[in-house]
Amino acid sequence: MYLLTHAQGDLFPWAAQVGAAERFQLRLGQIEEAALELGLMPARYQRNRQTLSVPDQLRLHRSRVVIVGAGGLGGYIVEELARLGTGTLVVVDPDTFEEHNLNRQILASPANLGVPKVDAAAERVGNVNPAVRVIPVRSSFSRSNGGDLLSGADAVVDALDTVTARMDLAHACRDLGIPMVHGAIAGWYGQMATQMPGEDISRHIYPSGKEQRGVETRLGNPSFTPAVVASLQVAEVCKILLGQGRCLNGRMLFLNLLDMEFLDMEFEEVPIVPGAAPGDPG
Amino acid sequence: MRVTVKLFATFRKGRFDMEVRIVPPGSTVSKIVKDAQLPESEIGILLVNGRHSDRTRELADGDTVAIFPLVGGG
Image 1 (cartoon, rainbow over the protein chains, first blue to last red):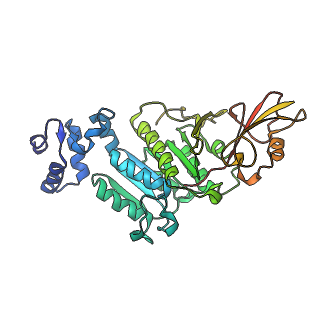
Image 2: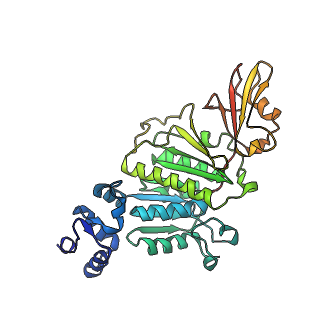
C-alpha cells in the first residue's frame, strides 16, 4: 500500500524507494522488486522504456551475472550492468589499481591506486545504483574455484586478460550450462563472441591455445577500445537475460577501430555437448 | 594455384591488406603464414573462405585465407 500511495502514475520515485527501505527495514533492492511486482517502474529506469518493459526490468532485477575481471572491460561492464538494473553482480579480480590502469579503466583514479579493483567496483555501484547487490571476490578465477564462483549465475562475462584463464572460464561455463560472453582487446582491435549452453567456443576464439597473451602486450589498450567491446558484451548479456533478439553465438565479431571494420565471422561448427540444445538459454 | 591472402589489424603494417599468391598445389595455411613472415606467437584466428580453420588445412585453387592477430587483453 505504501508503494502504491507513493507512486507517481506508474513510476516509483527514488526518494520513495529510500523512504520505504527505511520504514520497513528492507534493502533498496527488495523495495525495487516489490515495486516492479506491482507493475511500477522505479523512476530511475524510466528512460529504459520502451526498450525494457516493467516485466523485463523485474527479470533483470532477479538476475545474477558474474563478471570475471574488473580491469578495462570489467569496469565498464559493472557500470553498465548496474545502471541497467541487474540485481546481483559477482565481480571477480585479484588485483589492485596501478598507475598504468589510469588511461582506460573507468574504476581507476589517482585516489584509489592500491585499492582492490573489486572493492572499487562495489563502492562505485553503491554510489550509482544502491539497489544492485555487488558480491566482490578478490581472487583469481581458476578451475578449482570456478564452480563456486559461477554457481547460480544466469550469465557470465569474460573480461579476463590471459588466454589460459579465458579457456578455463569457457570450459567451466560449458560444463555448468551457463551462457558466457567473451570479449578481448588489443590496441585499436577487439573481438567478442557468445557461448550458449551446449556450445564450446574456446577452440574458435583461441585456436592455438598456447600463447598466454596477444598483441596487446605490444599495443597496449587506449581508453576507447575497452568501452566499445564492454558495451557490446553488456548488450549481449541483456539479451541473454531477457531471452530477446539474436545473440552472437555460432559466430564471432572482430573489430578494427583504426579502419572502422566490423567483421562477423561464422564458426565452421560449434561442438555440441550431449544433453543440451544449442541456443537454449537454460 | 592461386590463393587470396587477407591480413587484418597489426599484420597489415609493412605488408598488405590483400594479395593474390601463387603457391604449389597441396600447400597448407601454415605455408601462407610462413611466406608472409608473420610471427607464429601472434597468430590468432585463421579463416579459409570465411570459415574458421587451422594451420594444417590444405588449400585449393581459388581459396581465400584470412589471418588475424591474437587479441587477449581485458
